[in-house]
Image (cartoon, rainbow, N blue to C red; front, top):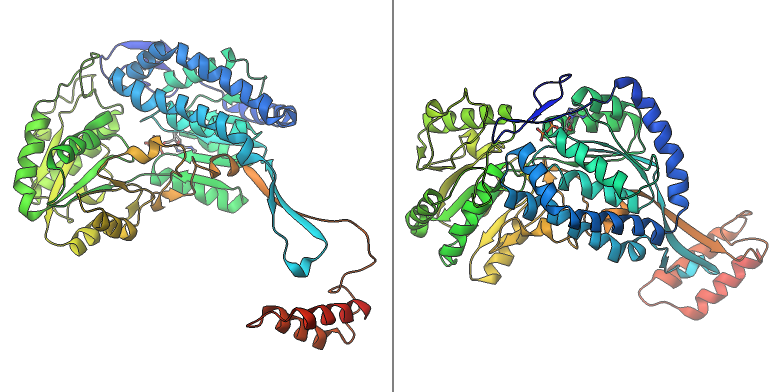
Length: 514
Ligand code: ADP
């Protein structure tokens, strides 16, 4: 957590201690950063994919060596407990790099494609060409993962990268910069710009060849607007208000453990976290009792054995407070945690006890807006249809989960949920599988990464068709004289109910001779 722009003393939100002092990137540097990025990109793209992957492998091995140090740095900068830094921020990056090492050559290779009969004599394929200098702007909640995965994906695809980590967790930004330097990436291939939103705006205005943004809907819209004006391709990974639907036939013990982990991990500062629980009315009270008991047994603190760390960003605590107050005013009941009046707001540390809200409904901000805190509202439902309607009644559509032992029912519900991911009898899992695409529907964003297209989004997809060059002309070229009726006949013979090969060939030869 950085104290203020300009000062660059970094404090831990868990202990309040100063953990680092650092240098902000000057605004005047921006043109030079891009100049360097564009220069470096040419030689980086000229490397074979194998050679680029060798750099990524070196980075991965370095990260494996440094896991403990990284977990400490992330935990200090964000306030999250070290186990979460390791399992949910560091491990997914290491796994992600290994996935790229295994799949990049295949996914970036020339893809041969079929050529239709009427394009007789040609061959078709798709090539993937790097876009150039990619700008990656990342947030503070998973400061390593949400920066590193787009960075390494863009690099593997042959781009150079300008990374702008969040000013809320700048220490992790400096740490990542050091990792790339130590892994020996060529100068200018990946550069870090450290600063706040003003620097972010300067970097987006400097016309990168692609913008990969992860953060709030508000900023996503600003960046989307700019990208539209300049026609810069963009991926926007934004917020979520993810529903968890629990049917009466679910394994309730497992669902309860999942609900509290999915809701409170990283103090709920997760775009994919469980933010709304819908429980079938017949098990609602039993489920509420279960999650209440389990929540009360969680340990909160900064030690390696604690479950829940602190919040990261002071301003976020204000949002949580306003959502809780709004819910309580509208009749919700705070089942665990403290009322906002009892929070110790003067402290430098940002711990918030996990809060379960019963009696919640869709008039409350805690149910409709992204709270991004350790808050779990729970709402009963009566029918499958009602559960789907409640889940879809949101401007967001990132993640969701469905809990039932009836997999046909789970499938039915999954097909109706307007979200980028659905986890069945599980929470948050899809993001950890790099084979699967990641991204949101509705206001949760535009575009996908991870999966097969994780590297391809950072490329121009180029359609190529080759003709041997023999032969003077083609049937659809000039002159058109007398060709029209023969084309009608040719297309009827080809596309009609049954292809008439003999007439088709006759038509073709006839037009060729015209
Ligand atoms: P979050 O609260 O999730 O961090 P933000 O959207 O505030 O979401 O910030 C995400 C990232 O976007 C941060 O790195 C921040 O500095 C950057 N940022 C904020 N505003 C702008 C902007 N107008 N242009 C470019 N980057 C921005």
